[in-house]
Image 1 (cartoon, one colour):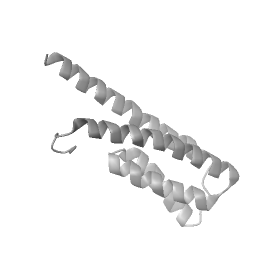
Image 2: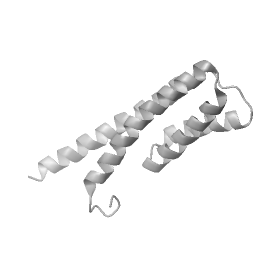
Image 3: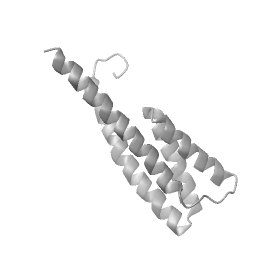
Length: 111
């Protein structure tokens, strides 16, 4: 429905859901990081990696992947990992907002 353009609103709903869920996931990562809960942190990083890659938030997916691999290797993440992930999410959200504005502008010109 997204690729063939038959339901353009579907993509918008998926991305809105992704953004909402990602904010919750980042809060979970913050909490797990503060508490030193490495199993929860690894699971959250894996989930964030997968969902980010699915919607094309590739920089965020890569950051989450790096965190997941560090944890799988038994490494201890630096304290700034939550901030790094949040910055990548903000970057994606800003790019998405710019894209939506451009699409709206083009649609407005077509009237």
